[in-house]
Length: 129
Image (tube, rainbow, N blue to C red; front, side, top):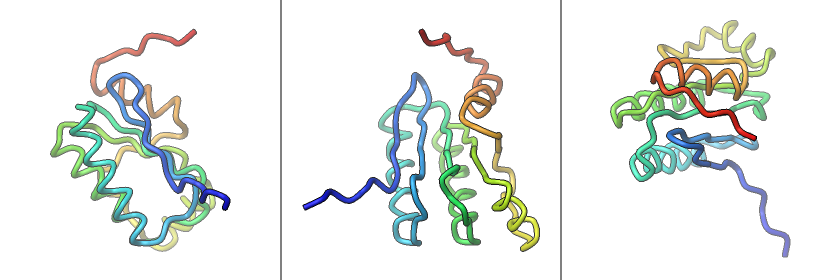
């Protein structure tokens, strides 16, 4: 029996969590992602969260609202959230459909997302090897 692929992962990097969505998630999977991530923020005492959606070629209104909700829940738990990796076609479609990310902070990629957290939290990262 082949194990099913992971739909998302949540990894800790210093004071931050990096949550990567690996494939399109249905509504119930998005809710599970939201629950898991908000729980990990408290358990890991994370000061920042990067949500990487680069693997998504579609982001519907429920997904957009869920990202906004995650960012607000994270804020209420003391963490700053940055969404990274929104593909050009996805960004175009979101604007054309009038979908709003609200006050969610976005960045081009993971590196810029981490730099954004460092700047907002005044916590420079130590460069890796």
